Length: 477
Image (tube, rainbow, N blue to C red):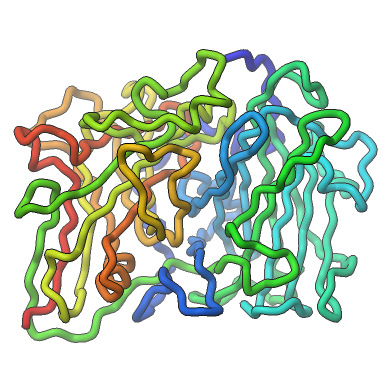
């Protein structure tokens, strides 16, 4: 695909092929109890949430890279960037890992604080009080991409809000860059992208240790882009979409620990199966990104075509794939599903809900590793026949996950491996608001050959039992 050089300054990028241990603690550690999710937030509350998992390890990006919660923003094209963000924390610090699809990589060889964001760079906004206005708990941390991976304070900037505006402040944090491409600061050769790890100690934010389970902060991210020596203006990509750097009420929500829905007591329950073609239910689904003919596309036109490709309507399988080598982003893939809930009786209590996916294969079985498949609620409707990587809805909140192993043998259609994900948190709110359950499925995998293939709702009736299934348990009348 034209990439000749590998430059990674992060250990987790180098050890991306480590075998995941089979006996891994759940990614929902530690959970905390909460009655209702904030997926459809009331006025003034964040519309986009990320629930960050806790890991009792020394270095989150090195030790639990594949289990970090993931969200994304932006678009992939000749002149715009797309970014995956992985996030997690341990007892000492919050970790963010940004993987940016970028055709041209430019950094300042003589950096200055005043113009760090005029080059390829990332800005992270944090408000530890979860407030709606700038205040002393509001922080702005900037890191410019750089070629050498060694720490260099000249490429970082920290600010804190004072009197309602940003001011320079000493906030200790560390960053490590990585990149994949042909040449830096050269607009004649195309690159693939860059990465940046932020390690933000809690003590730097005025805390004695990690926040209590369920603590809610505000979070925002901006990716800045430069594609030539002249610095032709390119629009920033932001998360969440309506982010205003000076108004924390427009930022997203960061929650520490993964919440677990606890229903009120019920005397009896009934189970309902929702599946395409069963009892007249129509389930919409589609894959985006590295699917079928669009997988790992190397025809020389991936910057223009790849992100706008839509999966054929009759495809019976779908891929979910990610990895830490950003050079291979044309192989990355997501899966979207919409389950209508109008066939469920109204006025009941949701006790539990789980999504069941049937695995039918994986990439390069002899080298594949297990994957943690993550489910996120998508807040907008979408057209399954026109869905693309670039127009697919963003994740509104991550709600559950499951581990899926490696298939070494051809599929036994009567006994396919199952991935079961607790999506109760999403169903509760969708059911209460009279909305369908819209899900996006992705992974934070690091290893090569991480793609997992699942049966879709478009498979033939002969294979109907393996179509994606939503199992909802409601209270009896």
